[in-house]
Amino acid sequence: MSSSYDAVLKLLLEAVEKTVEKPQAQKNGISVGISNRHLHLSQEDVNALFGEGYQLTVLKELSQPGQFGCKETVTICGPKGAIEKVRVLGPVRSKTQVEILAGDCFKLGVKAPARLSGDLDGTPGATLIGPKGSVQLKEGLIVAQRHIHMHTSDALVHGVKDGQMVGIELDGVRGGVFRNVAIRVTDDSALELHVDMEEANAMSLTSASVVEIAN
Image 1 (cartoon, rainbow, N blue to C red):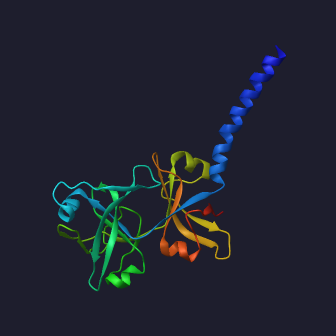
Image 2 (cartoon, rainbow, N blue to C red):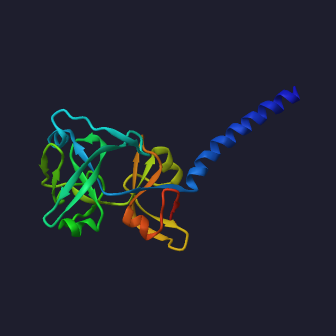
């Protein structure tokens, strides 16, 4: 009887340890996703740029569930210049959104604000050129506000909530702290910090980097 009891107790303790270890491992570090300039298109604009009824072609699955890089690219034109071969990301959205780097503003001749995805009111527009036509956007250009995607369970582990602004810190020769990092919590997000290439270069961040939320 004692032997059976000990065996059952051991199994229970192992189960508890596994349950505790996973959140602790997540809390120790957050992986980094680095983005270049890109855009998200509505189906209406997909039709205008690539042809009526066109469906985006999956090139590569991205780290966030359901998101993917597409084979398709377009040219972005502003008052002063253009940027060619800008990657489209899928799936299609209800409204077209173009995410550029801060340095791109000078080339295009626009003043794109730092915004979270979907916050497009009052942003500048641009002309998009595809193989089958063009689209004149009245708004939609932003520089992506740095943010952390989190599942609801990750938010509990890290003690944060959707919409909260935090700092993240990184060790190393070019390490430092980024303030004003937005927390974005949904039931279908994977834990990941999203920064653009300019921000990543400033701190020598790579896709192999791990960061922590600053106290």
